[in-house]
Image (cartoon, rainbow over all chains, first blue to last red; front, top):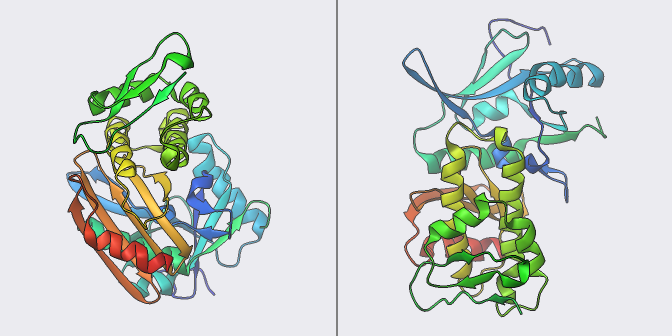
Length: 139
Length: 178
């Protein structure tokens, strides 16, 4: 895949870095819905509902964790312990949108979240079911 | 002898009203307001509370859930930066409401896994697989938001925690655990 600044390809892998073990189930190594919980904030009078992701297709494991450490762990002053990976087309399949959102390099956001909380929760479960968990130990 | 006797049938708020000089003097009674439970958590009583939990109690079926809830609160206290601005206060109120829900858990509904959300909600989850899962969150306003994924069926809705669990939620839980 060619990295394109303007759009995220359907077959691109997106990673959501976790600094908390409560974002996944150790028992069966699955992703919890809350891992994709969007952040709701105001910016210039606009209400933004976004889930921050990084585009990790084609990168080595070392490089992926390096991005997690530098772009997520460093700001939270914590170690990135895992990532939840999902392909862009899976996000689009549930009706959400993936858009590049640089800087930082390789940053993207999942947007298009519904206003209704129960609808958001339903989508979170579908994303979690489609995602793959990678912990720091297993790459 | 410590006491731990939340009463279900009085229709009153349940809470943590007294802290004495030792865990042996801590009492759970039914006349306290929910705010007292919050206050007890706020003052980091959970460590002592856990000690109490190891005592013979009169409410054993709920002990593990309460310990889990307290662990969640303790975790949040230790990692407050996980929460969005202002969410900590809401989380404590939500925890108190979650506590009341635990005590009124319908028969046939197993113990949930308890977690928190960064916006200050408490979450109860019943999980079999990623595609056989149901959960609900409760916020500081008693609002319940539930959702389930059962195979390819995705359902959800909202309700209010008002003394009993929403029937639709109970039905979904029983479908997931069947």
